[in-house]
Each structure stands twice: as C-alpha cells, then as structure tokens.
Length: 471
Image (cartoon, rainbow, N blue to C red; front, side):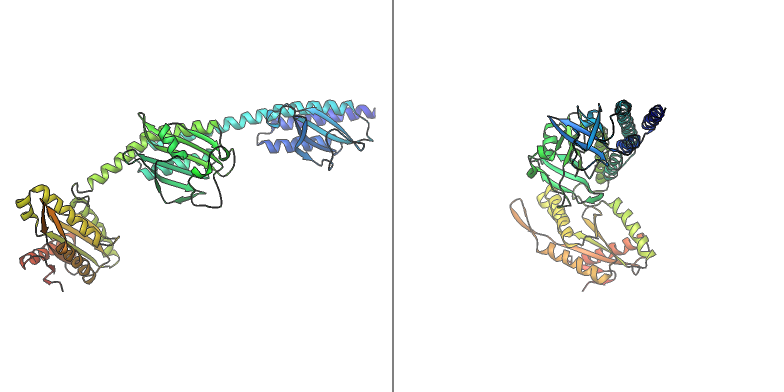
C-alpha cells in the first residue's frame, strides 16, 4: 500500500510539473528553473541537471544541487537516472538527469516520471521558443508599420534618422547605430547620424575604402558577421575605446539601383544578430531610401530657397526673417543689435570694362572677404545687387565698427585678376544699432542704408555710422 501511495504521489507531482511547464509563457531560464525545481522535489531533493553529450564528451548545461565532481555516469556514492531531452538548443544528445544516493533502490516509477518530464519539457521549450519568435516577429512588424507611418511625414533628415534609430532599438540590440550617406561625385562616405551606447556622436566623413561600410555601398549588398570573421583594422572605432563591436549588421540604402548610403546596427556582444534581424533591417533600409531621398531633396530645396544662387550667402527674404527674429530677442532681453551694410564701389566699373561675368566674380570675392571677417554667430546676406548686410547680435556700435573696418580694409588691400589685368577694388559701409538708430526693422534698415550712402557720397572706401564717419 505504501509503495502504491508513493507511485500515486509521484504521478500527481509529474502531472503538476507538466501542467506548470506548459502554462509558463515567460522565458527559457524560468522554464528550466521550474523543471529542475519540480524534478528535485519529486526525487526527494536529489541533485538534478541538464547535460549535453557531443563527440563522446559530456558537459553540464544547467545544474541544481548537483554533487560536486560527479559525472552523469554515476559513482559508488550516487546512482544517476537519465532521460533523453530532445531539445535542439541543448544539443542532439542532451538529457535530463537526477543523482540519487546509491543506497536508494532503483525505482522504475522514478525513471518513468523522469522520462515523461523530459519529453514534456522538450515540448514546452519548443513551444516557448515559438511563442518568443512570434512575439518578436509581431514586434518587428509593428515597428516596420510605425516606421512606414513616420516616413510618410515631412521629416528633416536628422528627424528621420532619429525615428529609425528609436524604432530599431525596440526590437534588436543596437549598441552602435549609424546612418551613412554616400556622395558618388566625391566618393566620400558621411556617417551623418551615429549613436553609441545611447549617446550621439559627431559625424564622421571618409573616402570610400576597404571597410565594411564601403563594401556594402560598393556592392549594394548586406553584411552580417561576427568580429572574428572580419579584419578588425578595417572597422571604424567610435566614441568608446574600451569596447569593440562584436556583432555587426549593415545593409545598403538604395533607390532605383542607386546606392544612397548604408544603415548599420552593431552590438558589443557576439552573435547578437541573426538573418531575421538582417531581413528586418533591409526592409527598414528599403523604406528609408525614398524617405531619405525626399528629406534630402526637401532640405536642399529649403537651402536653395534661402540662399543667393551666386554667392551662396543668405538671400534678402531669409535675411529679413532672421532680422525680425533677432530684433524680437533683442527687445525681449534688452540687448543691443547692430546692422552693417557693405556696398561695392567697383561693380559698375568692372561690369562696363570687363563684362558681367567679371562682375559676378567680383561679388563672389567680396562675399568671401566678408565671411572671413565675421564671427560664428553673425549672419551675412546678399541684400541687393552689390549690397551685403551683416546682422551682429548682442553687439554695440563700437564692436560692429571694428568688424566693418576690417572688411573695408581687406577689400581695399585685395587685388583681383580680370582679363589678365590686376584690378583694385573698394567698398563702402554703414552701421546702425538697435535701438538707438531704429526701434524696428524698417527704421533700422533705413538708417543703415542712409549711413552707407553717406559713406559713398563722402568719397567711397569709407565707413559711416548713422550721422557721422566711423573713427
């Protein structure tokens, strides 16, 4: 009766363990912990474990209270019960084992329970893997849908790259992420958007070389590899010198057979990515290609709309918009603001003597001199035919005078070659300060224009502040 009671209790424990395993939907480690906990309890808290056997050698996979030094072949102190565990991730010949004291009589009931538990454990593990794969695939499909929706929005290139990065890291390891753009005219690669460990890094530009990014761009083919399979000296190091990329995926961004660049996701962990991840990244790159093309075209269009075609400086319309914004800030924070106008004294003569092409060249030279004399925070624009304006925020008349004088002097000292002749040119300038010479845009522009005309009437190659010559 006692033996029958023990067998019945063992059947109940086995059934409870099987039901618990099949009901678990978390992760593999929790399922294995549950399996070994139940098995240990069923076998009177014996040492239990999962082992793999390959090429005649046995290795532990997961152990719980397993006697130290004991191999699954058993010993004089322990009898080891084993049951095949047909789960591919643990190897072809993996098995579940229980180490019972040798003094304990072998029980066929214990062996049958172990066999049943191992068979159901393998099934539960396979089902869990399928659940995980389905959830992962669903998450990736959801990410692709989210990216597709964001791509249809009018995003700037940087916002577009940020959207890709944000969605990608939700479904795959992305310790390093970058978007590379390729300029086929210069054969240069621009890593325009780089993140490492969640921190954005400055862009990197390099000539097409033998590295993986260049290889993907040159061949229009994706790459997936472990660090051991690719020469380390061809990989670009990013912000952290303490870590190296161990797993790398890279796919081309191409549209209508033209390679626009490459998209890369990398990890500091080996084998962090698989073919499924590569396929997802390739799909993202395909969606991104048109969006990047549109965003780049939009950015270029905006830049052209705001730029003078001849000199590359800001044009008049955009300058006026910028001036309005700066005037509002100056008024709000009670700060000064200076406006400088530089007017060529020589354009009419050059056009008449050497032609309009030479006149255009003169204006470009003048624009270059002005840009070389201003500060980073200053704004320079081509305001009219031969007029240039400088917006100097948080600047009083004295400092604006120093900058404008430097421009007038450099123009005077410059010598240009036109039709084989050395030509000396000059420019005149005017200065007006907010709010002393004008409390709004119209008054300020009128004041600086009058100051410039005063400089020209006084003999040219001069600089005037409103009402008097600058000293």
